[in-house]
Length: 87
Image (cartoon, rainbow, N blue to C red):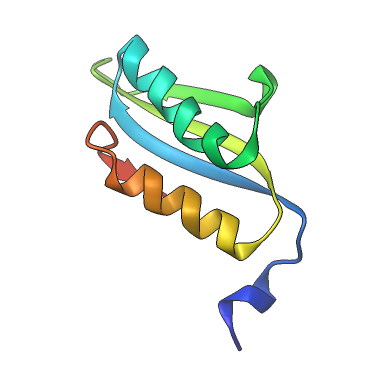
């Protein structure tokens, strides 16, 4: 079974990134996703600070239109130097 058959598009899909808790990282996370989706509503973005407050996990729920779109998002997110981890 191919990966593409596991999701039916369009669908809501959470993109999760972790990085240092800075205003720059928060803006970068949003920009990296919006590059592929267009403007994102603030309600679609959730964050959680690490226990010591140095790192933040940002989850942006997008309406994914295709597997290719998701692959492109993850390629950009994963390759950005400010993103420590992408899920």
